[in-house]
Image 1: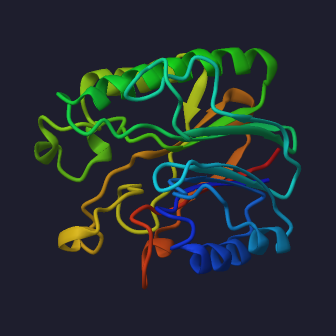
Image 2: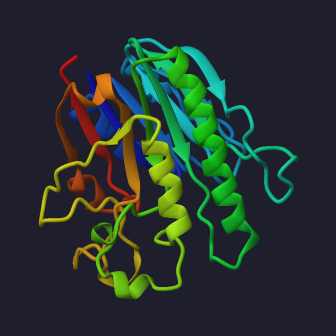
Length: 260
């Protein structure tokens, strides 16, 4: 089974590239983030044999699951998920889950946080805490589980191109990293992909100032897998080629091959 995750930064803007990539890489399950649409453009993916579970609310956010191995038990959001700016208000389109070929999969787009002083940062931490509780419940029902997506957190200093450049910024603060550690405490493993170039498996590069060509990136797109899934990983890589060319997303996909 081939599992992949990709923040496409607008599925409509990236649709021709997405379809070409699906044809070339042939993932069985693809998690998408930042789809930025309320109406997912499904026709091309369906033509390729994919079922689609999409959760979007328009211009911002948005997640989707594409599967050609079944799509059951679809859930839009998770219990306890906070809203923003009112935690008790409507939740944003940031998580969708389903069972695909015996694997419980979640595609998540974790809030950015903006700055540590911004209310969005506290929202991010609350969102991650609620995700942990929800995944704990999921693991009670699903032994084979993977949560994939744009976590907007670099797990360690080795996951950013220059830690000195991120002092005082989000994505690297101790509370954010502790939130990821709490997810791993559930028994989830960080499936670290192999980079296609250089020593660092970065998945995101800012569009500005030639950051991609200088490989000044971050590893913020992650695949966290339960032990039965992680133990079956036969290979994983960052598809850096998908970040090249005309009109790419600022993220590259992660592709994970599972032997079972």
